[in-house]
Image (cartoon, rainbow, N blue to C red; front, top):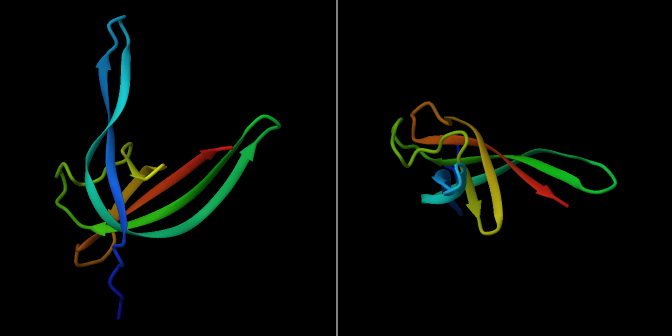
Length: 113
């Protein structure tokens, strides 16, 4: 029997908003859309760089309670989750279980060192 996910990680869902900068261009800022509780599952990671800087990345899967397609609270690719100072870019969202009670968000955390 499948065990229920442990939704013990508090995440803030964010998306970008573009506003005119007054000089013919745009400013992009991230705005919070709401809070989700999730189970965080580590996946793969990698590192690339040169003598000046290194980019470390790790993939995760977040399991959240499902919400209807099209609902503003449903995460989408190009949005991100924030957990304190950590940022997770959403790559894809899929159903997690056949009953449709949970969704899986496939995310990537990147850190420049």
